[in-house]
Length: 104
Image: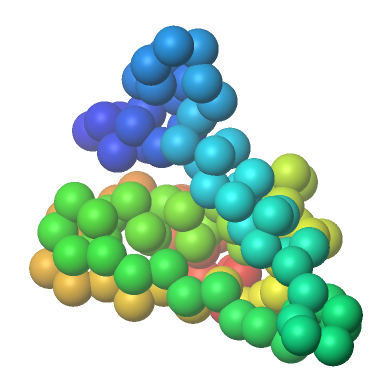
């Protein structure tokens, strides 16, 4: 079933020619990374947690995998990217699982 991946990565699912959901999330994370604290210091020490329940759990597994392993984001965000899911449908096949585990 490719519906979860299509929803997250396919820009044809967005309206008005907007970037894919993944690209929108990455852009938001980039904006957050440029924020500064009251003293003008950049936030350097932070972690990324991706959470979800049910369909959101499946999407969070895909998103955490993409954030940790995508060439688009590999060197931009801190590792590890932690996924916490609840009652999620199965995502991927055995090959995908091995790749997911290799990012741990």
